[in-house]
Length: 320
Length: 170
Ligand code: SF4
Ligand code: SF4
Image (cartoon, rainbow over all chains, first blue to last red; front, side, top):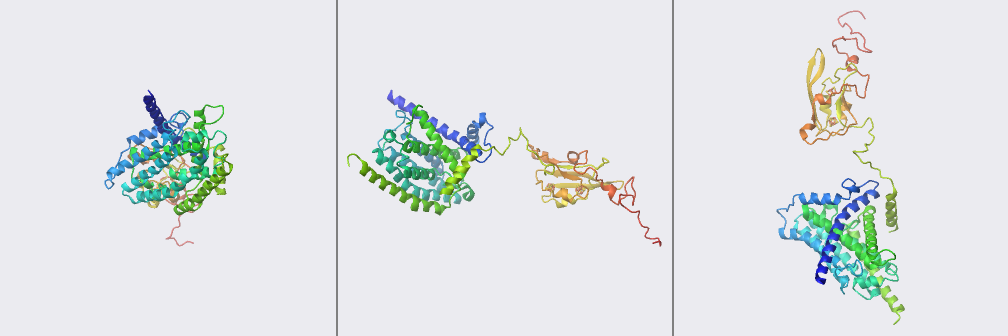
């Protein structure tokens, strides 16, 4: 009975995730359109909502081409790895107190960090297996970007963990009953947001893709549904980071009046919209600027945040 | 950093701006009369073809998409065929500028997509219109010093009768 329910939960979550990621492509294009004073896709279905379906059908029927010079096995594996890691990351997200695949996992945050870190393999391997200079450059950029951002991504969450005394995401949400962690952990929030953008290769940190310099970066050689998987993995990554931000800093499902699910979806949705706004507004920094910003600004800020949070906990804790 | 936040805010405000684009097939944008699109061959006010097959348009065309052949009928020159390959035309308007008789003109009609490429090759019948286009009064043969039926040398507008170069009178 419980096993059956668990599997059902997993299936429902997966389906919801994938359709959300696909629908997000439409939301993003529509919002970008509004922010650029144009309409965006509004033809297929009511308000263009079926655009994602049309795109999916188009991708399915595109020729799925593997270049003869590519490393076949790795070439096929790379997008699947990207997709799998992102979807696994969702396992630990608690939508509500009772609804999550593994929200009570006592190392939830570590699991999430591990999955997002594994995600870089898909990009690097994809770039490597394509055997194409542009793709390789994109993959290398992704690797360097990950090294710079992975480091303080973990550190930025440390303050939250210290405040909540737990690695489990459900416990962290519960600890935000009185005050969302965005207030005491504002620095942590900002740094995690930046690291999250870099993690999902979103503009302005989409250097691995870099359309204007690298063709399409790591997925230059990909076509058809393999490209579609990279594409959906990117959008699922946005949803993942946004729901993580919601869980860790915006109080998860907590909120008055409305049912918990609605609060969670609302907060996540607004965070996603903010991601899209970033894309609409900000230009891409140069490569060395990005690394420098990571190592020289954000890493010290994170360390400072951890030190200050620790000191504050020591000072104000009732036992100390 | 602050400028980034300002950019974010200003971009966000565009959510409340009116969209600059129009939904094309339903609302058509205004096209200025001098817009450069589908090319036509016009006729002079008397209804005769203006083109005199001088080949200047074909020579000036940067993509060589005009092809024509001269023929003659009682002193007047006509194109035997006149062909424009619109799949190559870049609508630069140089042909219109080069034409000495205002025959070839670009119009604001841009809706000329085709499913098959050969359909984009327009023959003279497709190009020739029955009107005068942008220049209602101009008639090349009425101002040119060529003898055509109904108008001998020296009878054009602002033209003196020909001088008898063998005569001795001043
Ligand atoms: S518009 Fe330009 S390209 Fe087109 S036919 Fe005239 S000269 Fe050639
Ligand atoms: S269209 Fe004009 S330029 Fe071209 S051949 Fe005719 S008269 Fe000459």
